[in-house]
Length: 442
Image 1 (cartoon, one colour):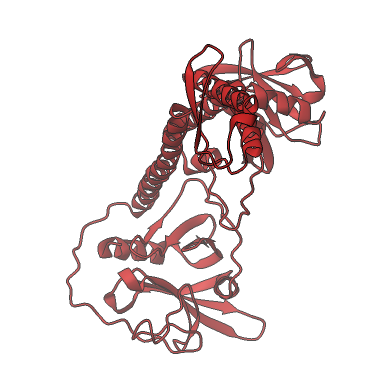
Image 2: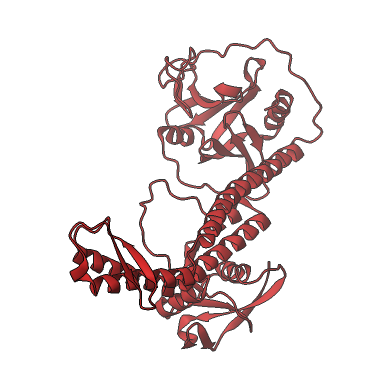
């Protein structure tokens, strides 16, 4: 973080902030502080990418943080009066000195925010400079400067450098701009990461489809196995033990040589040939279905890539392709639909006819069903146990229905109703009444 910007923000805080109303950690390295009333500022102490910013919409915590650092942070600074705000040692170290009035005595605490490269940290100090807690604890083996609870904090070595200074006209504008630029870069990085992952899956699927055996080849292979098995079966009396090959003629009088190197027992070998013939025949029947299934998966991935490219927020990216839980147990469970989660509701998408049928047959009467109006589309089911679902969930489900059913952006009408009102006619073809229609833009 630039020194001149930190200096300007320090002056801004000094002039506009009298007390801390609220404070907590919302991301691994980011804390939110509400100064006075509604003056909310975020402090990101990520190593190598620290910043201070404001957002027009409040950023919600991704999870609850309950480490000792978080407990002390809130205990010491919520509803604390600010005594002083300054840059310590004329370095990139912002100190917020506070007084918290308890029923017995005044407690002085300093929140030290270090925007100092590899030493970037948040440290909570008592009035003697003893470390009460820190975002990052540093022991003697890691650095000559120890950051450990109960130890007095040493000063950072002052770097002999003259910081470049620039004039800041409006600190608030800069704080909002920092967030917008940060979000824009994060959005592009997340998009790139997710799209690369999907493109790899796309290439793998395309390669799998390309390498699928042809139906004609499998049928020919099956016929060859059957022929050899029948010829051997009719000539068992002519085959000698440990014979390496057998020459005979097929049913059209053509000479044919059958390799017997792997036939330690001729009867077992004949049974194996019949088994191989049956498998090849069955595979030739199923190969078309397998190809269709793979092509449908490929089409879904292509649509997902397009939707990620058009996503406008990080939350939208995470909704379309959430991060996998590191502790998630891997299973080989068959996938009967695509699923998304929004505001606590599970939204299920049928990306092909087989999945649409599965959703129709396995959804509950109270679930909500979505479909594009008067045109073919994916079926979408929102799991629900009540008579109504929130408007925001309806809009999100309708958008999913349209995004994975059409190839172009625009305004579309989506019908929705509870599953009890949908009557299956044949396969995924249905009749439904009553219903509501919503217009959405994608």
